[in-house]
Image (cartoon, rainbow, N blue to C red):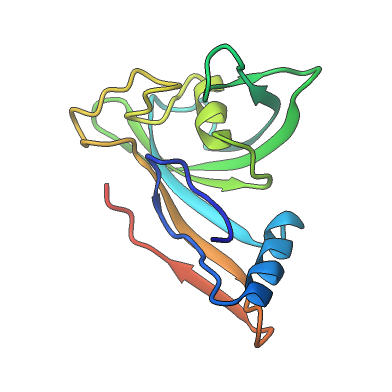
Length: 160
């Protein structure tokens, strides 16, 4: 395995077939060369049509696996976001582009903005009655193929 998704997040994952490929793909992820986008449904409508959020976060050791904002001891997480559409019932569909890869980064960032991801049990109200799940999906991945050196892009349709 080259990277990870939160347990409740659906979407694309990359698996290497050789140790060499795993090493090269891991390097690309570590150096933030890989481009990732996610789609999510969030509770509410942001005040702006797009934006960027940058917060320092760390593990809440007394409330694992929850992350908390900590400007002194946290590590920086940065996410760009864009509203794609507003849906009935005060829900918005957004595109998220993480520039860093902190644990629960997208979930924490949306909750911090006051618009938690629909169905998020850690950072939102956990209500899955409308969609049956947390509505966060890894929809695209772009990276350089570890053997050919050619750019590759994968996409996965959003299931909500």
